[in-house]
Figure 1 (tube, one colour):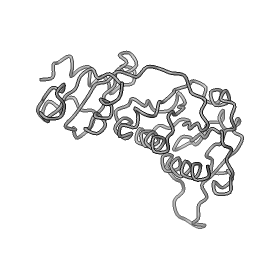
Figure 2: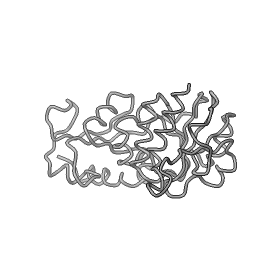
Figure 3: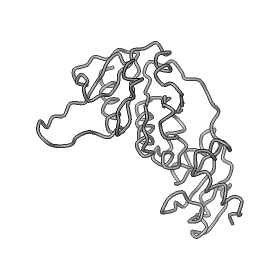
Figure 4: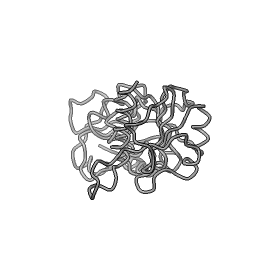
Length: 239
């Protein structure tokens, strides 16, 4: 049984302000929750419609799960977790950053792509969707535990402080396939609708684009998650 207070808190966690106040977030789905449970992130409460999911989980029926889910269709598993401990940005060879990415699914996918390529952190502008949004957590498929998201007020300054050349994805840039990347560099991807902010653009060392091979007509652009996957594939292919 889910108490009235538990239900209220879980539903409040749909909103960023309550996540920040409580330091808690919601994760749904067996794979995602299992990834979080196997990490060092602390689980506050765990609910499941499956009696065999976890010994620590509280069994509830589908009707109760429908009352607490953050999605249209409930998953058989829902957990409430504490935020991980905050840590400084590491000075690694490759830094990936996002500027104003507003779509939760795109951010979750970028986190998953970073995980695939062994990137352990993602620098996010303050205008980027919260990584503890339930949709971001779900789209990351558990990769959130291996890719730490750092939110910064001034992303330009944060990237400049890493003392590495900054490459930005821009439609007016040089072809990705004609560029030689430095071994230590930062790569930043912008908003799905507006691209990179002016503050970031003026501090770029290089503007890079994925060329469109269809000369007339065709797709106007790629979404930011697709672009970041293509970029990272090329970056690591050349290393």
